[in-house]
Structure formats: structure tokens, C-alpha cells
Amino acid sequence: MKRILVIAVLIVAATSYAEGQSKGGKEKSIEQELMQLQHAADEAEDKKDLAALDRLLTDDYIFTAPGGAISDKKQLIAGVKNDVPEEGQTISYEDVKAHVYGEAAVVNYLLVVKGRDPKRRDYTNRYRNTVVWVRQQGHWRMAAIHATRMRP
Image (cartoon, rainbow, N blue to C red; front, side, top):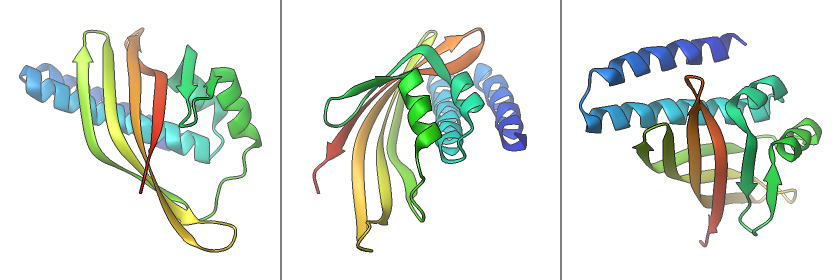
């Protein structure tokens, strides 16, 4: 909970700073803010903080998986609740780009997932993700993610 409070303070500071910047600087600041929120969502999933996920996602959130299957907010939260986190798995983000359109933003990045499979073999999976964020009641919330697995 303390970490979410720290992130919230950082977001407020980043937003205040962004208001005094040029459009390019403002978009960069919002990009940083949205990626902080992305990290918060990832952490909420890892720690099974369902309340934090509920706050970070719009009610009509939709996820499109690499294979084309879709799920909504309710399904995501149920999945997180029942999921067993993979020990030692790490994620990182590369090639982040954000575009702001008023009260909406589109963030595109390369998600790199590293870990070990059940046979103890190292793996690295890469996904190109496009995330739609909307500002609702003054707060950014994730509305949609579309993930595509990149071939090695």
C-alpha cells in the first residue's frame, strides 16, 4: 500500500512538472507516468493486490492475448486471484513510445519476459504491446491491451 502511495505522489509531481513543459516534454512526462502505472499494475498482479488492479483498470477493460483470445476486467482479476506466480521470472520494457490524444493515450512497448520453464531451461519471450489509457475523473486508467508475441 505504501508503494502505491509513493507512486501516486510521483504521478502528481510528474503531472505538475509536465504542465510547464512543451508538448514534446509533456508527452514524455505522461509516457513516464503511464509506465509507472504499468509497473504498478504488474506489481499488483504479482502481489495479488486485486483492489489496486480494480483501481488501475477501466470497468470495460479488454485484453487481447497473442493468440487472439480476449478477456475482460472480471476475468483478469479472477485469473490473478487463482494464478501461481512463476518464481524467478522477470519482466522489462524496451522501445517505449507514447502518444497523447487529450484524455486518452496510446503506449506501445516491447515487453521482455525472462524465466525458467518447468524443465529448468532458460527462456526469453518478447511481446509487442499496445496499451490504451484513458483519463477518468483525473486519473489514468488502463482501458485495453493488445499483445503480439514476437518471433525469436
